[in-house]
Image 1 (tube, one colour):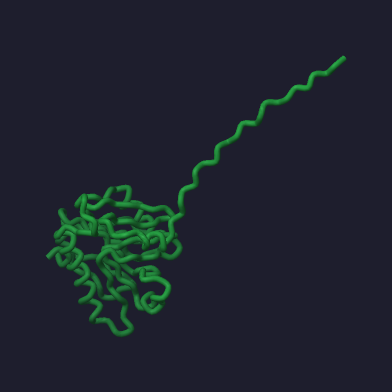
Image 2 (cartoon, one colour):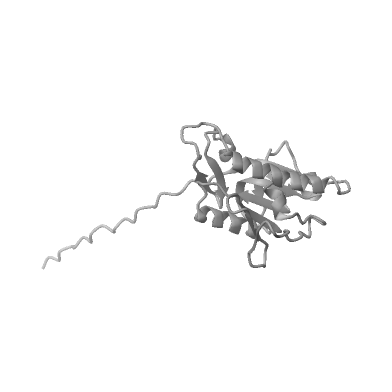
Length: 209
């Protein structure tokens, strides 16, 4: 008796999912300025469109820029009172590479303490490489809550001691600190002291006028 040979059907082939590009700091810096804010979190590119479609350079609205200047000025005035070596205040979408968070972000205003400033290697990168003592995000009309939450989580993951989220219209500052609940301050309040910025506790009103 002849035994029939049964050929099993071919095994199903599981498609390989398309791998997402893992973005690096070099990739980010290589993109021409086209008015879109970009940053990297956990190797993935994030984007926030320009407030001015068709404009091919980064342009800020004047209210945003004014607050940025007041915040930077408040830090600079305090910094002048500190002994050397001093830290440094940066503003205008400074690039920051955060240790331990796999992130490269653009920050409206940041203060780096003396140790971080001393460790910079301009031959390696023009970004601020290290953990700021203070990060300030100024809300814009194109900022989404999802984007904001992700950036705040990233800053706290990197153990940034203080993160300020400034609301230009409501004239409030929402303060985040690792291990603390968020606190909201208005123009009748003074902001809480930062252990890494001794003596710096400006009135909220100073950031708006």
